[in-house]
Image 1 (cartoon, rainbow, N blue to C red):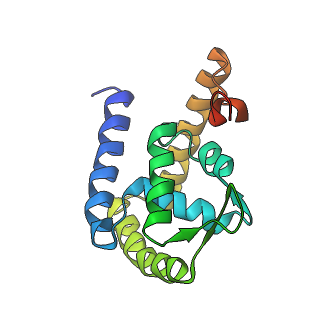
Image 2: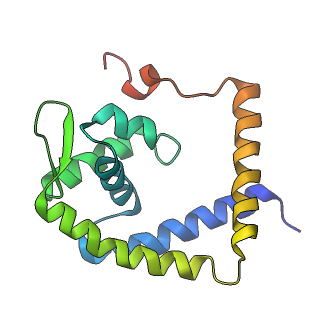
Length: 149
C-alpha cells in the first residue's frame, strides 16, 4: 500500500486537473472558482479574507492572480478599495458553474458511502491539526498579507 502522502498528492492533482478542464469553458480555474466562492460566502469580502480562507489551497501569488482574473473577467468588482463583491453576471455564472461542480462531486465520491467520506475528512483534519500544532504552522493574518500589507 502506498503512503497517505502519495494519495493526497495524487487526489489533489486529479481534482485540480478535472476541475480546471471542466471550468475552462467558463474561463475559470479551480483556484478562481474557490476565490468566487469566498466572495459569495463572505459579505463585504476583502482581499485578506480571500487570502486567509484559501491559504491552504494556493500560495499568495496564485491567489492574488486569481483575484485579478475574476475582476478583469467581470465575475467580481470592487465596490470600495480592498473590497470584493460578485457582479450580477458573476452571481449568475456561479450558479451555472455550481451545476457542473455538483456533477463533479457525484463523480468524485462515486462508490464512497457518506460515513466513509466523513471519516476520511475527519482523519485528514486531525492529521493537519496535529502537524500544524507541532510545527507552529498556523497561518496568521500578517503572513497572508505579506510584508507591508
